[in-house]
Image 1 (cartoon, one colour):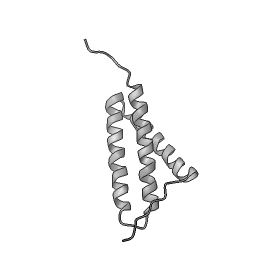
Image 2: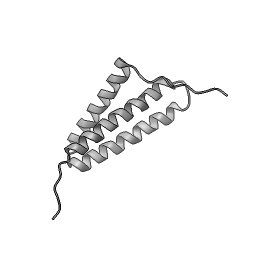
Image 3: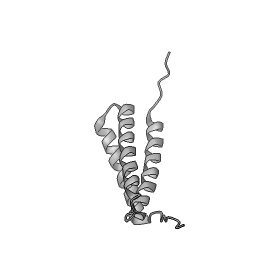
Image 4: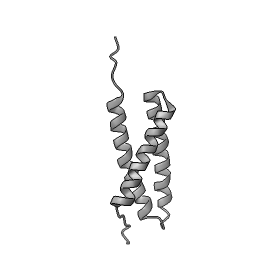
Amino acid sequence: MKKKYSALPELLLRSIFYTLINYVLLSMVLSFRLHWSSILFSAAMLWFALDYSKTIQQLTGKRLLADLLWLGCILISTFIAFFVGYIQGSFASF
């Protein structure tokens, strides 16, 4: 027999992980906004958002719930970046 398990702990952990990673990537985009590497961080944010949304939709089976969770995580990480502060990155010059 297969064991049934609740998807809630996995949803919670994935959402926390996504929020933290999105905060770091957003911080890097803001830190390097005048450097070409900000395009790479923006692409990573897009790829990670699509992956997160697809995974949550597979876990819940509901697209609306996946989109609402994704939007909530985006809002939380953006709030943290703009109102608490973001990580200041810099390139070492050689």
